[in-house]
Length: 208
Length: 208
DNA sequence: TAGATTGTTAATCGATTAACAATC
DNA sequence: TAGATTGTTAATCGATTAACAATC
Image 1 (cartoon, protein in one colour):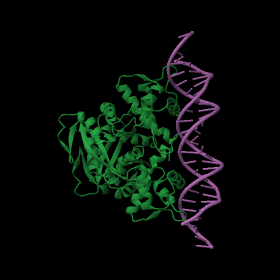
Image 2 (image 1 turned 180 degrees about the vertical axis):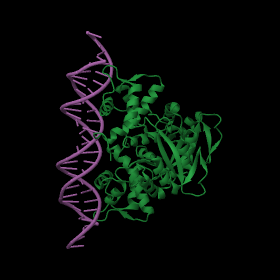
Image 3 (image 1 turned 90 degrees about the vertical axis):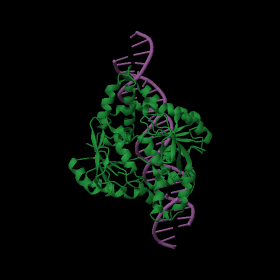
Image 4 (image 1 turned 45 degrees about the vertical axis):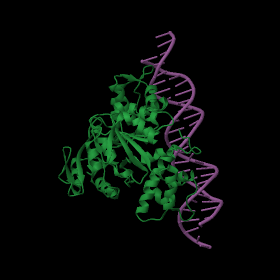
């Protein structure tokens, strides 16, 4: 549960990373200012919603001219606390875990996978990129010592819950779960899910 | 746009795959019946919501006893149209695309990647699993010929929009987009997004 | 039967949109 | 200045929850 600022709806927080991504892109394209209308057009969101969402955190724009992109970006990064680099623990070094570890997209967006764990003895000691795979039983100690708050779980569904329990006991407060299963976690732990099949199944309903 | 049944809210459709996943798991655990309360407890959703969601599609349960899992599962698979196998075209055979192609989780949940395309000449002709990478320029022809309706995009952000445009022109009606960019598509095309960074950034707000 | 649970209605809650004064 | 766009308020819309009769 948000131990945070005066009750911002979670659905609003959920849209901020999308805004941030669009702003970064606009900047790459050479724009310096934008407006709620332009952002809305790009994202398929109403301009009113964008203004309302942003207004929860302050007035970032100027009437008549809109938003300075660099400034709004900084502000959103601050709100989302990604104006720093978070260490992330990755559990699971199978096909999926290794793909996640190799993913280049985390850099410069606030995250760095700094350790990888796997329960299989034959994987321990091998490398993923420039990280050595460590035994799962070391995870609690390392997570606690380094004060790591974020983890990604890429283990089979059968093991995901016990892994989550261990990590949470060690101090993890947010989990990105790639295992196709809903996790039971305490109220003060956040979980996000990535299950490509769920995303696909959300679309087939609309096909004939 | 839903050219479908009497206006089911999209947010309801979005939960059905989660229910389906939980039912499959319950079945694996040996259960034969369940209730809206048990499902709700597992998923962190109210039992009322589950009953209301299901009621859009019919009465699948029995007062006093709940739902027969096998039956409810079949019904949901029918509603979601995943009681069949959908061919999927994958575009992009870089690290990410290859990981997606190797992912074993699609089988038995309604999907099979049946072709892989990449624009880079040095990738064309190489294999990913048992699929040969084909040149991007062949994609429209093959998608149209085989009547493929679903695609996954795993190309750099810079190329995602043009790839989407090409695929849609060739008949693709639903896209799972791994590129970190919002796509502009016609109203009758569905898009789902997977950007792990967005998921991570949705959680850091709540950390200190 | 008594207990449990569904399907559904009505009430509540929350999110989105429309509209506009303020102002750059 | 005239035109554009913000931030915000109020109105609308939609989703969730509570409650319960029906019934297995």
